[in-house]
Image (cartoon, rainbow, N blue to C red; front, top):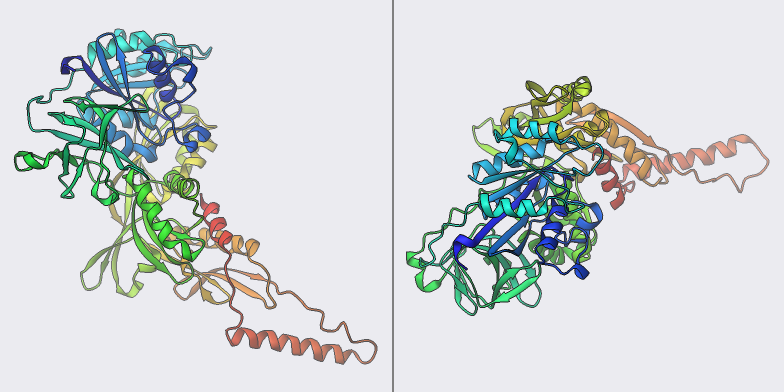
Amino acid sequence: MDQSHIRNFCIIAHIDHGKSTLADRLLETTGTVEKRKMKEQILDTMDLEQERGITIKLQPARMAYKEYQLNLIDTPGHVDFTYEVSRSLAAVEGAILLVDATQGVQAQTIANLYLAIDQGLEIIPVLNKTDLPNADVERRAEELMKLIGCSREEILAVSAKTGAGIVAILDAITDRVPPPKGDANGTPRALIFDSKYDDYRGVIAYVRVVDGAISKNERIAFMATDANGEALEVGYLKPGLEPTPSIATGEIGYIVTGLKDISHVRVGDTIALPKRIKETKALPGYKTVQPMVYAGIFPKEGSEYNKLRDAMDKVRLNDAALSFDPEQNAALGFGFRCGLLGMLHLEIVQERLMREHGIDIIITTPSVAYEVTRTDGSKEVVTSPLDYPDPSLIQETREPWVTVDIVTPSEYFGSVMSIVTDRRGIFLTTEWLDPSRAILHYEMPLSSVIIDFYDKLKSVTQGYASLNYEFLDYRPGKVVRLDVLVAEDRVSSLSVLLHESEAQIRGREIVETLKETLDRQQFVIKIQAAIGAKIIASERLSAYRKDVTAGLYGGDVTRKRKVLEKQKKGKAKMMSMGKGKVDIPADAFIKVLKRRS
């Protein structure tokens, strides 16, 4: 198709502002999906997305409207999936900025808007949910005008649920979004913005063709990995796979590569033709994603390590924000140290491994990455408590800090400031959206944000606040390793790195959780939290008391005392000989983790 008739766009918004519902109405209005096949959130194809009511994966779909070809990419809204949004934006020329008319501009609205502006996209502001009785269209329009600098006439008011105003959006896309500007006669180049694995056909790459065209059965090359393959099938998504003889300049589609080695296909890579590889310049691709949180993932059954490795490879294929390296743990065996974007991301990876690949896993306590400078001047990045050097060898430890934007009604300012201060936050500025709502800007340690801060924020603001954060820099901090000892044995998988000021509270939480979780033994179990040789929290789990005096009757009471004393010495001997070792059940690791999440 002539490029002048192609429009590539995506929908960006805060979570739960109606992106997927709007995508449904666009597909329905353009007749892309038959009414009898239509269902809610049709682009949310994962079971997890349907159950949770959130978009986790970007999803492309092609529509025909008048004489135009419209290529839509639906994107997630949660802060943990911002990387999915950034990849979508690199494949399009325009973005619909969707705002809930009842809630107004939220933290992720602003974050995603800035991502779109950085890519130089045409922004179409849209107010959704205007059919609801508490929708305040004019007030929310004022917020958008202040945020974007647009005129009132540019802002569209729609209801994705009822379908009101959908045609106006389609007209705005054809009128305002610029067409692609690729070279139709140039050297073929395509950007991989997503991919998935098919057991029968290998890796399927989702691509945006930038120049030239790629045809079925044509030999293709992957520039970053030096791999070669064949386009066994090409086509577009409607939203199912629709084969076509070729995909041309400016179009968004898919290529079935037939490659079984997942490592050959990378998100952000350039697909070219082997015969013209020397004259092909690689596309810029994507910024390497920076993990925010690290956690160990181990199979519950040690024999499933290889199965877990294959599953992790397949999950990473269409979750480019996931990174992992092999790790060995004395208690849990072989597993992986994983880098993720947040706690929700970790939760989703766990669910996908269990549902899609049938693997039960154990997750160790999450940690952020710390920069450590040793006394000999050498530097290293520590992501696991087990790798943290002895304090006598450390000159300085630097912890990651983030900029935090909190959108909240003014009546909750005091509560928000209180929980931020408790987590070592530094106040910067207040930016007013309207007389009753503002954005509070802070700097905070990342470790204080990723665990339970979002839940606490929602709690103190009755659900009205929203949050966005971005990595800022590393700063010196008093970081310590908190070790957990059970029956005087260190449980390495429960060790955690944290700021000195938080150690006492966290140590108390862990020992109390373990006391509730562990099974009682024939001897007293000491459960301790320690920093180095200093015990900062302790609990005792009392022993089972076997009634060794049951066979005694009558006689002197000293006989019973002798038997009980003998039992006591036996328990002490059991401990001293190392026979008092306690096995930590798998659910204990999960309960300790949940205590913080």
